[in-house]
Length: 277
Image (cartoon, rainbow, N blue to C red; front, side):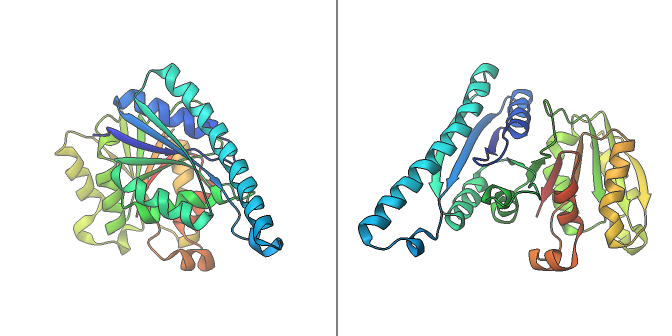
């Protein structure tokens, strides 16, 4: 049951996709929704300014501008939340990036679900890094909303990316509130021959059936580079509203150097995706 939700509202990127999705989810779940936006301060101001007084003045100006950005983002959310009649709370903060990541990562640990905007590969703002930091630091599920998403979030057709791994199992459990109300469930079985036979796609179908849920299986076998495009292709063909998958089975460094399904999904997702790490 989802009753306590957190949404990160970017202060340096578009906000409408994640706001509309988070509010519609809160409405559908009758959940409380907390919104946080962080205005990022530069960590290098002191390197470019001489004199303590000058440094302090620049820091104050930088913080003021950062807070203005966060407040502007929160104002958009608050207008929509008030109109929707949901229970909500808003918070605008400022911090240097490393402090912001730690703050929001810790804050997210007390929520049933965190909702974030998909990173945009064409931008280099700290808002782009925050979603992955929440995934790694929160200890809970994170719902990524594509930055191309329009309208509300209504997850009626759900796909589970399944390889029998611990992370896939974690995501499956975290997605239980969505699966319980799904109209259709598609299990995308990834390289089944390489997966634990005790946690096969057929076993997952049986497991879901015991909870009154019917699922069908789509099997795929391919190398690592082809998995993410294949998942999105199946999702498009089946008109999927939500993909459920484990996030970052390898370290972030390995995925950055070698590539990976999670990294590829965050770069190219076309469907809201629930990840658990």
